[in-house]
Length: 359
Image 1: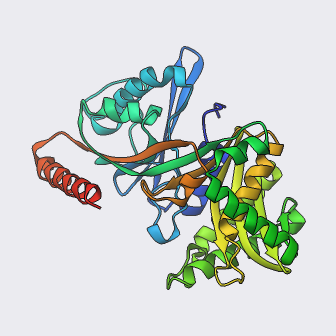
Image 2 (image 1 turned 120 degrees about the horizontal axis):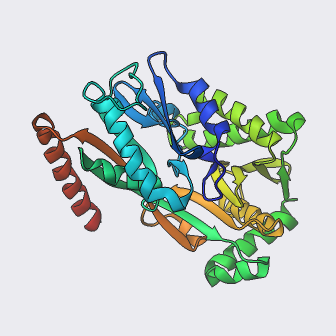
């Protein structure tokens, strides 16, 4: 695997391999493309084909059990983004969509046909965005923003971080922190050994389900494949010293849990759980993020990434100073039979934009 400091854990072999062996169906086919310059490997495109759609590994599972992979991309150095985006588009077109017309020596006969391409949760600055743009030579390109990622660039000291927060938010956090520690025997515990993992995972899954069930929803930890995937991945992350599994206790009771991954000098907040019925209300979710960010600063981690949230009125804005939009695209071949589909999607995008502007 090409190691690049800008890539997230969603593109690490550990995540991709665990996802494939958990979610891939018997009719899904890997379609991984390697691009070389001479003898040097320049890029890896981790695709697969599902139901005649070319997708990225880590996407395409059923919504109720999806792991929501983000920051997806072609694995390569930023200095090669433009060249790789164009070259990969040519390879995919030659080998997958017009393979019966080409004799390109690098093409292997595909084991299944693809009719379109779906790309999820990528940044506008990514190599994947260059690839999608280059595919516009051959495909109708339908894209939309699916959310905003929120990141805090961490300063050198906790005092500097406190100064970044708004006065009212900082006052609220400090009040709840003091109340949690003094009146509620507060404890903040990290589960960092395999012997402790099952206990920490049980706290996380119970608190996550508790929060969603209080809203009349099922909660993703009720899905067996979701649970199996994360138990496998989290154990491997723990052994790699990536796993941040923390639980907030008050009066001996677990009231909040955070599951995050530290990778390439960034702490990625992935999942949480809350007991919203605990009294007094200590804002345990905010407090957990605050404590973990302070811990990250102590360890000289450079970024705390809340990942994707709503574009407007997200609680994540209270902590962060970097915002980046995430996109998804569907690409269909430029032919007359696809024109109706494209026009319907363009009209839907215009309607959704007007509704968003008028909120």
